[in-house]
Length: 341
Image (tube, rainbow, N blue to C red):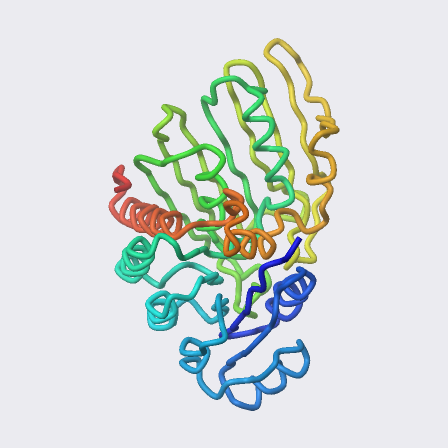
């Protein structure tokens, strides 16, 4: 069978791109790395030689205008996305962008509108790497009605940064549309608790978000930067037929680990949670060490072979995340419930 060649252009190949995306793209049959543009010509040339691109570009516009490129990955910072991604779409190229879709809702809406006007072009947002290894089993359990009708969800996460968007991204695809939120933030007058991943002092604080879902269920996000290493990040899912508790494995960008990982469950009437065994039919997919194969899904979507996994965000998901973040911010400032558009 002939494999359709997909020619890749890359704008902004940073550390994560070189360690994760590019090696996985190169491993896919029929993918060609054509041209890369980084912040400087010297950096572009270095990445081209290191990763096997046919050539480097002096400016990102050369990548957009290249006639021998079918799809472009944009790995630059979020603030540059509207400036770069809109021309990519207008040039007829498929697009995978990293980080948040845009710095604000206006930019996200512009990107969504442009992509919707070109339905034959693939436009995806690389997902945050939280709960990617748990994605397949959680979706399978929910589809198998393990907990029945979902009534309430708790999301506990303990990091040196707030990162509400990454948690919403997970909850939105697992449990559906959020309709309104009530947000609360509390800072503590104590010494910073170390530094975050950007070498900034960690603000000692707790954050709480209560949200209602279109399904009729509720979800509570509970975040802390002051909880110690004994705190366990997890999703707790409570339904009318049972319970699921999911403790995540460290994601591919983190060396942090916690004492407990995996899935535990109980049916109504059970007094104790028990480990949930992985069903044979999804065992291979669940045991993929990198979780959902985002890069392979993108290429398959470009080839028209299949749609990308729901774990890979569409532009509409990026817009919903921005709307949720704006509603949370407004609610936390006003102390009142705020509707999510």
